[in-house]
Amino acid sequence: MILASIFQTVSIQYYLVLATVLFIIGVIGVLTRKNAIILLMCIELMLNAVNLLLVAFSTYFGKSDGQLFVFFIMVVAASEATVGLSILVLIYRNARSVDIGLFNKLKG
Image (cartoon, rainbow, N blue to C red; front, side):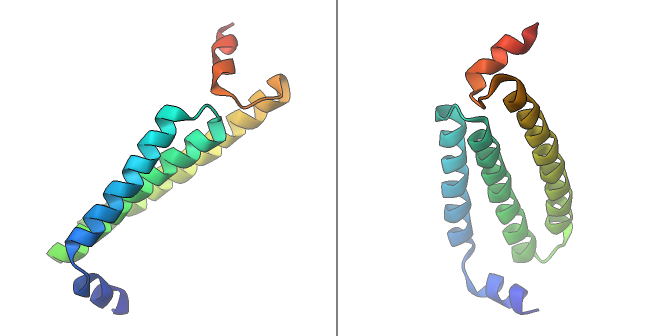
């Protein structure tokens, strides 16, 4: 109840600006970084920006559909992080690096 009142007192434009900034930071990180762990973190940042918008619009329009989508996105993000980090651990054991340039050598 308190969270809903906070969302209603702050204008939706602030959430749009914040989510846009977070998403742009994530995109820039994905496009410029070569470290696979940082890439995963930037992807998570982009997913969280989308989650923020879904919750903001869900509260703004008074429907709970967006919050249901956020739950599923969080489940997918958690599984993506688990699988991604386990692959990175295996690659680090073999190559002693998490540079994404080394992934081309895994073609076999």
